Amino acid sequence: MDNLPSRLPDEDTLPARRRPRWKRLLILIVGWFFIFLGILGLFLPILQGILFLAIGSYMLSLESAWVRRKMLHMQRRYPKLGATLDEARDRAAHYARKILGRKY
Image 1 (tube, rainbow, N blue to C red):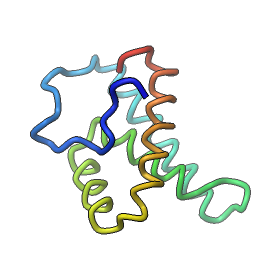
Image 2: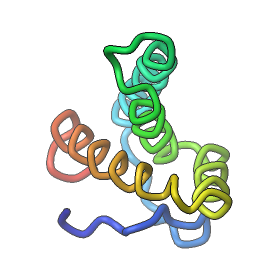
Image 3: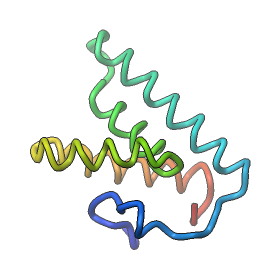
């Protein structure tokens, strides 16, 4: 997908630019919405809970260093989870582009 990294960036390699406040707020709202869907999906057989949690985590990691560090830790500790996180990253990037425009 375009020029997205294959893994989440480390804190040191993040770009210095800041997003406008409304985009940051929208990313956080969408991220927490997916986290909520993921929690519901853990209990309801209709929703894919783990995938929604991963998408929400990726969206939140765009604005939160703490979430970014936790996701990197999870990728290193559970390599099999990396495939799910990669799929979630691709879907989250697609949703972010759809919501925020071509570049976010």
